[in-house]
Image (cartoon, rainbow, N blue to C red):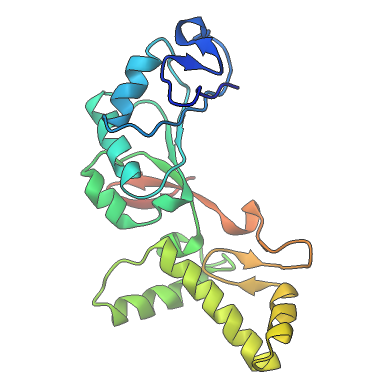
Length: 216
């Protein structure tokens, strides 16, 4: 596993870039804050390495910029994975076609209509989707509103159950089990304040025809 020397694109983990074996199975971790187009620098620096896949763990405009650079460089045949921060259709729109075929692990709320009827989150995600579109003139929802929905409804459940005592609210939330939300089925404990497992919270999604689709 390699990581870049701080402030340098000439060396990776103390080794000259030319010393890296293009046939190896290493994972290359690369992080730079540079004004130039991100992927152009990547190719110029690691031109001898043809990756099996690329993971871009960023959020915001960077996720779109990288996709446009990737497309300009003709690298669309390399599997590309975005972080769960890619969960807004506005990112797909702003990529102007460059997001096609890109993978991302997303919560069920992003793909409510694609979920099978037997999916445990189908009912709650469809209800949120329908209410959101009715409220906001058919605007597409995103992952981020789903996170707020989960947090709000947990707090509402706590208030209804124990009132407004802070300690009791904390204890109630910390012991929530089987809460079916927009981003998974939450099971909290004193040792687990995340409450989710990858099996119960993430769906591998791909951009297909300008929209999200479940990976078969």
